[in-house]
Image (cartoon, rainbow, N blue to C red; front, side):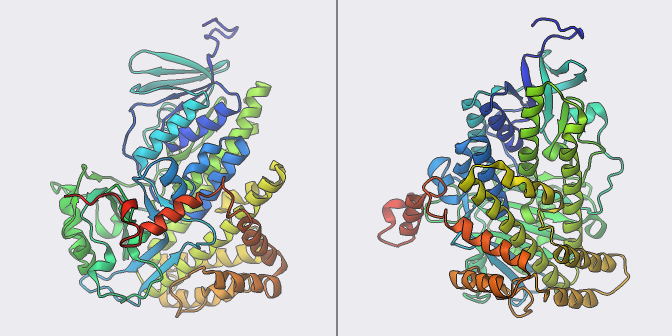
Length: 579
């Protein structure tokens, strides 16, 4: 490499990305597709284990948007279950719903204390990603578009300078780039080098985790009398959350459809150590897991025959946050920057928001050869405020876990926030498809730092008031019963779609059937405030027009999965049963 006037070797790459997980590979693919010379460096190699396995509609829509905006159509391949099955791997699971079951220690689960949020079939079906397959495929997409990759290279130094960045591996190899993005995770070399972690973290929430992959996990609906909950979908056909005071447990099956080729189920227990204590000395993680779930008869029943197929991971406190995420010629992003908790599956959405915002700014900076911090200030603001929003969301949820009526109210508010945000991105994406003009995405950037909640004053006021009611419970300024009643009253606001039933305490399943969608459209046109009504009309109708697009959905695969459910007709479409 030739020397530069500043004394360092002339950068060989435009961007060096540390980490080849989902964040690093997607960013590499979109940058390389748009002309940047990109290097991905990773301490390990694929395939490798990763968490972040359950998607939400907002995440999938955002991935479609990134694919369209930056010209990487392959990324649409894993935005629906059927596309992923046909184009990437048959080892993933289907996600038809979000399921929540509330438990009390020493008692059988009360069938009346549950919620299910089926994902409307008129839009798309979500995924349980088997990440080792997906991440390896994403790396191949990045390479296909021109990114270079180096694996088994542990980074020991990152040195940003006036004329470039020097990245050094444990082998002594060095690479020079004009910009570096650290997307490597908790042990981020850039965060270590520059001392970017807040000590102590500002985050309110506290939790630790014990997780693994298991086989022979019994589908929950098979452990209780048939039809006892009356849910629209089976619990095992979605992401199941077992909720209890001070924590929750995820169950993410990869084996939950007739064409499944993967027998594994992802399992993770999250505990607030202020309530349940830290890791006990001398107790193996599996034993702690078994001892804990034994307190809850129905959870224990589901896992009685199950066994782990990989080592258990037991963590300390999960939460960490950054002092700074942007500097001259560098960016700290995704889980290299901070982390809250897997609850509500927002991690991938946050990652994609940052990729979407960073990519066009970084491409412009490369073109102008101007890496001033000011042009990336929005990205830093986005990352920091996302962390604060999610911290508040999850901390309030954990507070509500202590009292079922409060949890019942809070999860309704979470559901409404997800629905409103999805309407926003549905509308923006449909307009992008129709016009090809990225200017239609500007509104998304204004709302992304606040959980993508619409910037309609009464809606934001309602959301903030609900949050304060829960904080008042946490800080002993009011009782949980009082807060729950106030929140249910706030949900009667005219900004909340009445046909969905979020304000009705007797409604526990929020099934977006075509009939409910039609009633919601009538509400949006005749009863909702004009701004909210327009959001729901456009969010539903503009996107649904693209439902049958061959680029968006694999209808053939959807049909094959439907046939596979037929006992005789579908036999040839199902994998042979193990002997």
